[in-house]
Amino acid sequence: MKYILLMSGTKAGVEGYHAWSQKDIDAHMAVLRDINKELAGTGEFVATQGLAEPHDAKVVRGEKNGMPVTDGVFPESKEFLLGYWIVDVASPERAYAIAGRISAAPGPGKVPTNMPIEVRAFATHEPKSK
Image 1 (cartoon, rainbow, N blue to C red):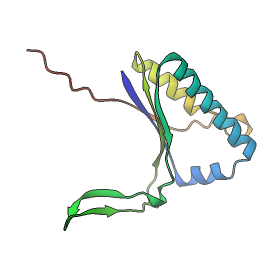
Image 2: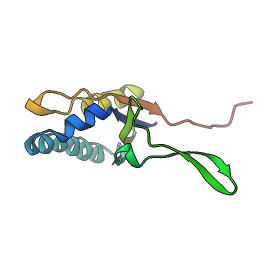
Image 3: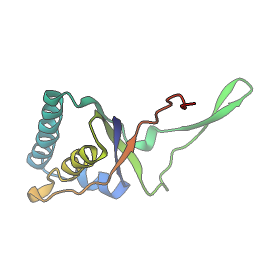
């Protein structure tokens, strides 16, 4: 079963991250790289990608005069998407366990960040049985 693990954050959280020491950033990223390597080794890794900060983000809704209608930037947003992992695992519990490890990656002083990770299964559109 494929799942997407969505990491969200707040403006304050991102600003706090930018204030971390390089040592803390390196330690945090090393844990995430190790998780990615482990998942690749077990065949569960599909993809991961961090996203640019939301100041360049736009929401597109339809078209007007042949042009996309855009809205944004969203400084008032409480939370925004920071990045994602896609995993292909045997059970929801395994996806939750991976999300927990990602969430627990260390911040300053090796304290777990406890970043919220939303776990969503990919929709399946299997034919209905007769």
